[in-house]
Image 1: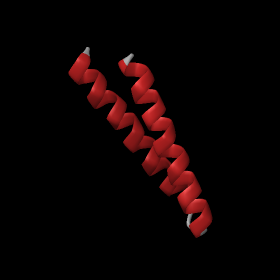
Image 2: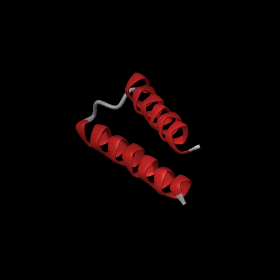
Image 3: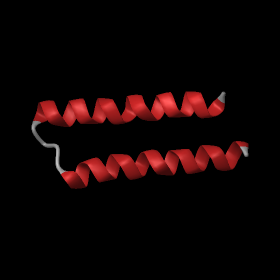
Image 4: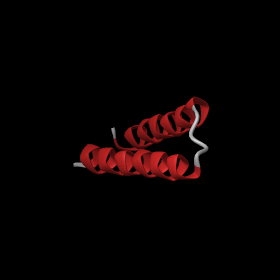
Length: 51
C-alpha cells in the first residue's frame, strides 16, 4: 500500500517536473537527473522509515 502511494507520488512529481521545464524550455539532462535523484532519495527515506 505504501509503495503504491509512494510510486504514484513519485510519478506525479517527475511528470510535473518534465512538463514544467519543457514548457519553460529549460529541460536539460542535469535538471532531469536532479529530479530523478531527488525521487530516489525520497524512496529510500520513506522505505527506511516503514521497513
